[in-house]
Image 1 (cartoon, helix red, strand yellow):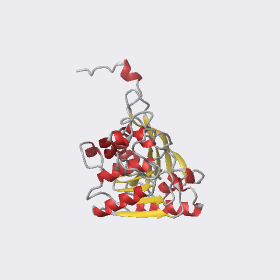
Image 2: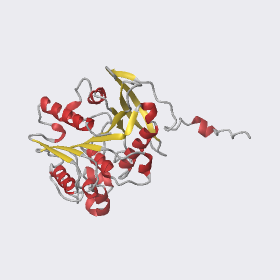
Image 3: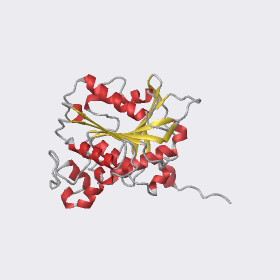
Length: 302
């Protein structure tokens, strides 16, 4: 029996990300392969979502590399997937090449911003990225069973939610994150903290939710990592400046206390004199924060 011919619509469309060939890799630093603009999800009526990859140089004798899934910041409204923040933009080699040179693969994923879709769309996108990375893991030489999700600011909020999510039908397509590194991120969208008030409809949090948090309390709670703390949560490293003027450091202190009470492994590092994005710190201290975060990601068990 002859198989039906594909339609013209099917022929014209780009190959689905699950089956599309990977782009050629470039060497971005000694021992590091870089793949840019790899589509991982198609969304009807929207742009394709892409990710960038930094991979340790292939070694057929070695085990697949653990994975860092990095989530960028930008108040859920802007930002670039390959940006670790203000204080790392001048680094050479760039931070993701440094992580890959240490033996961990890195994926930096797009997610839909608040001008495109409201919560839970960005979290759903990160789940799709982890599913795609798991599907293509053999080609990439990565082990998504050893994924550390690492995010800064709004990206840290999404990273926390991804790490704290209970297992569900979708998670059967990938292993949940093994650990989380969270820099200066909000954990509670229900309570006034610092400059944030849940009644204000013009905050980044309100734009991400689609309404002032106080007017959609259940949605705000669902989007609050603090509400999802549970026994059995993976290890967390929470790093926050004690002078943060954008996201009050109480967010990280509260999340750390809740994780500790639940019996989950957590390290809280409150950095003296640091504002949001490590503004105000000397370069040596920013380097120390990065290297301590990388050491935490590297030491997670298989």
